[in-house]
Picture 1 (cartoon, rainbow, N blue to C red):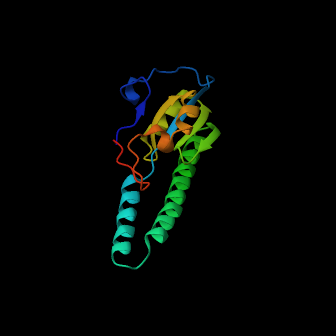
Picture 2 (cartoon, rainbow, N blue to C red; picture 1 turned 45 degrees about the horizontal axis):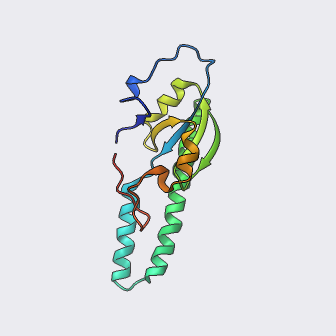
Length: 149
């Protein structure tokens, strides 16, 4: 997976910041383990096909497990950011975004974390929060996603 910074080709292309007193506010785009979500979804489909659970039971179970995974992703990202001194202002687990303020170097540094896929302008938070999966148009109706990595 390649993490990105809005407007930059890679973390190495990000502008260098010399002052640790400068604080910036950004939107952090979260990245849950999509492979695990897809695997679990497939397991539940097989359970339905085998007659072990009804389709509505499987859908409810997947929804609960997906919500738990999104919460875990948000918690992991929040812990990573806060351990570097960033402050979390808003979190939208369903949209997979959070707004954080901190030292630019710290914020860029979290791009190496598996649960963070991008950093964007602070103003993007509201737009992403209105769109399921952080504005990722590749989400499927079953709750999985075929997002690019």
